[in-house]
Length: 275
Image (cartoon, rainbow, N blue to C red; front, top):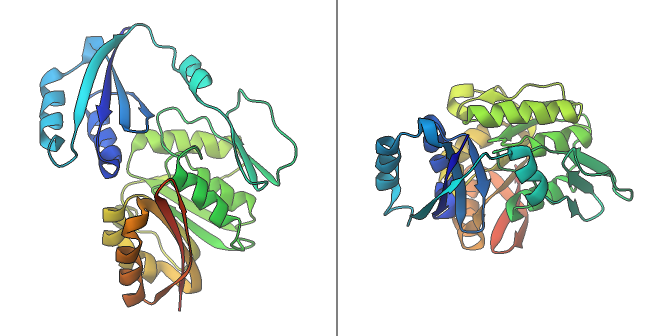
C-alpha cells in the first residue's frame, strides 16, 4: 500500500492536537521531528477535503507549513528500526526498543516500541521528566501520569517502586501503544482514554506527572493540585524556559511550591510540592 507523506512544520504546542485531528481522518502513523511532525496516510483512503480543512483551521495560529510526497509500501517496523536509537538518562535508566540489545551499567531499563506515540526519551521534556523522577521517592506511592503517550513515565514510576500507577491519554492509538509498552515492562495497569476531566481520576496521589504543553498545564493545574496528597509532588514539562514564571506563579496560588527547575535545549521541567 502506498502512503502519502506530509512533512508539517508547526509550533510545538500544536503537535498533539494536529495528530489527534489527523488520526480522526485516517492518518495512521506519525514521526516527531525537530520542526513539527511527519504524518502518513494510506493513499487509497485519503480524504483530501477533510485534510485541507484541518490544515486551514490551524495554518495561522500554528504557523503551519507543509510539503507533500509519496512513500511506497511503508514497512513501519523497519522505519522505526532505522530511525530509533536507544538513549541513556545518566546511569539511571536505559531506554531501548525491543530490537536493541540490553546494556549493563544502568539502574533500570525501559523497553519502548513507540509506533506513532510520543514519549521515547529522545525529546528534552521526556528526558528531563525521567531524570527528575529519579530524584523523587516513588517507593509505595500512588502515581498518576497525565497524557501518558507511550507510557514511559508510568513505567519509570513502576520501576522506581510505586505501589499503584494510573495513566491516561486523549489519543486511542497512544492508549493501545501504551498498554503494549506496559506489558513489555511488567506494568499491569491499563491506560485510560480521555482528558483528565473525562477520566476523572480519584485522588489523593503522592506523585502526579504531566508532560503536555503550557496551555493544558495552566488549564488543568487546579485539578492536579486538588488531586495531590499533602506534601505530594507534581512534576511538569512540555513547555519552554520562558514559560516557567507563568506556571510557577499559578502554582503558588494553588499551594504548590517550586522545589526544582531544569532545562535542556530551551525546554523546561519543574518539581512542585503541595504545602
